[in-house]
Length: 99
Image 1: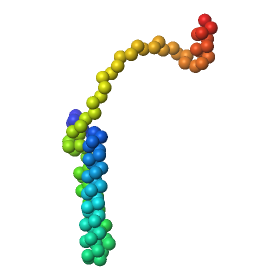
Image 2: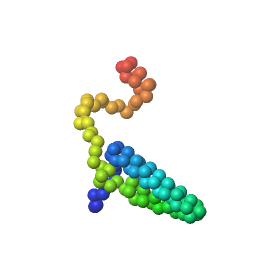
Image 3: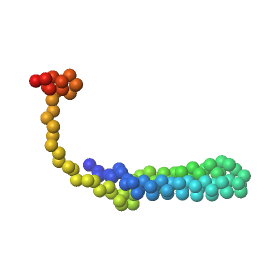
Image 4: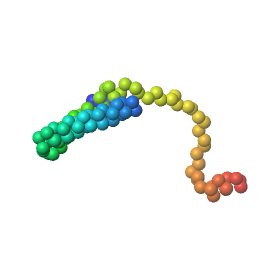
């Protein structure tokens, strides 16, 4: 099968959020200025929509530059396993103490 990565690290998520805010704000300001010049609010909405699409294409997929800081997982700790019984209720524990 294809080995497609589907995750971002925490630093990558912060970068994606920052980029999306910057792109949408930039296109919103440009759209507002242009819409004011041509006196058409629909042009403002169209430009903002284009900014949203561009922002989505840049920030939603987990591009490789969003995965530069992987998490360092701890090594597993081996512990003793407790014996498991079929009865885990308080009555079962009381019966075992009586015996």
